[in-house]
Amino acid sequence: MSLAHDDLWPRAGGWPSFAAGERADAAILGVPTWHTSLSPTGAHATPAAIREALSRYSPTLMGPPVVDLDAALRIVDAGDVIEPDGDAGIARTVARVSALAAGTDLVIALGGDNSLTYPVARGAGANGLITIDAHFDLRDGVSNGSPVRRLVEDAPVDERIDPTRIVQIGIADYANSAAYAQRAADWGIRVITLDELRRRGIEDVAGEAHEIAGGAAAARIHLDVDVDVADRSAVPGCPASVPGGLAAFELRALVRSLAGDTGVVSADIAEVDATADAPDGRTVRLAALCVLELLAGLAGR
Image (cartoon, rainbow, N blue to C red; front, side, top):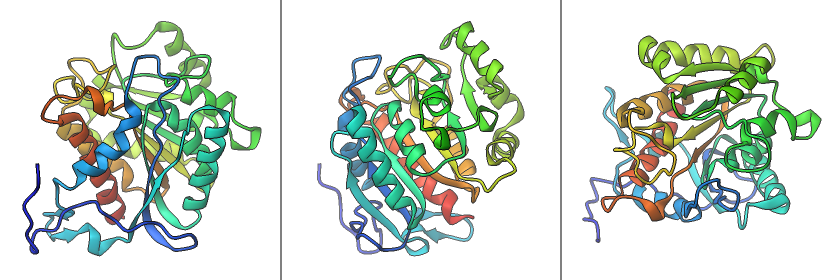
């Protein structure tokens, strides 16, 4: 369906292509991982779907004051990493993100399944990690269920993240095992369950997350936004989403709040399967809005 054109109502997305060596506030990069997913997925189709969905929205915040994100920020689109799965794909992704991070304040990676978190965080030089996720992602092996463990154990020694600088927000009942909960506790990962988040509120939790992930050293925090933390009614295109997750507005508010900290240098949007979405595209649309919320957080710094 074609969208109406109005010169006074600009649409989000359609940002200029990234040119090597240029300086930008934010860079969008597709990282369509999917080969190691524990559930059948078409997540490799999602970066293109998110870009298309962005055009349904304007880049304007109502404030007050009203802010046009396209006027406030220099945003570029760096295209996609080709075949980001496997050892060679991981190396390509790390190198691509590293080059972008050298010239931007925030790299936003469009997944893809959650395995993209491993190379994107490494490429950005992250020394702290915040996940918004119903799951620990501490599994053994290589899959979309293992990126947090891999950042602690599998990355080159000088790129590993100290688990005491990891905060996991939204961990849900009936979506994890006692063994992985114990692994998180043994490693000193700060776990903020879905129930605790709702009891304390977004701003309080975000403040603690920034403090822990930032640590004492110069903070370079990666923010992993696993959209399956949201309620299944809002995200039917997330294979592992469950009833009772975050409402769409809660996820959006949490993403914006966390992205507002200057220590956050990279983020990813993960676990959306555009090929399994509802006919109205609600999952992909929420993912696109999360991209805009990341930009809103950046603009508000």
